Amino acid sequence: MSNDATALPGPGRVASVNLSEKKTVRKTPRESGTLVYDRGFDTDAHAGDWHRQVSLLAQESIDKMVEKGLDVGAGDFAENITTTGIDLLALPIGTVLAIGESAVVEVSQIGKVCHTKCAIYYQAGDCVMPKEGIFVVVREPGDVVVGDAVTVVSLGDGTCDRVPEAECPSDPESASRGSGA
Image (tube, rainbow, N blue to C red; front, side, top):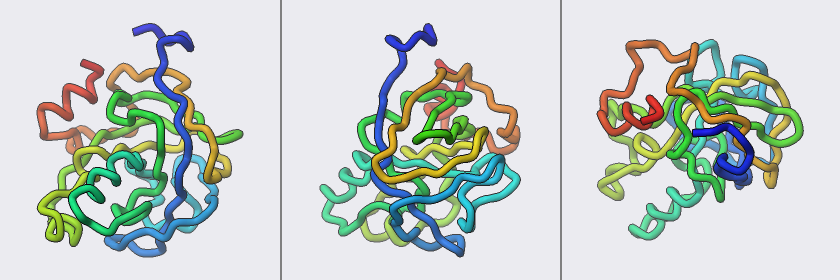
């Protein structure tokens, strides 16, 4: 697929910025946060020197869970950025996104293996984050504010230098999306 502007999906918007000081808990929605180069959000528990520095989940995915009767919202799936208006699952690994005025991130993983069932899973019998969440690494730092544009700069080729081989998706459908197929 061409990387010219007419072929790129989006743009979307930041619906919520969600941070937490501890892992394995729901994140607290905020109006803004600061992305640190190659780390993630300043003060967020998931920030670090790895391939899942920041997580994104579409509000449209959260809405699916609300339709199943759950009382959930932004941050409840431990996502850092809740988006709206952009099809995150259509973005292959390596896709570069501009967020707001200066932040740039690169898709490093699509979905994740859910080793332990979370509270959401037990309430609904399903959870959207492992299937519909994406992870990115921070390539350019910057502030992210609710309402900021999320723009596709370039579509990925299925590779990212921060994806450890052992962490590749085991789900064949996720793997084909990640490879750009």
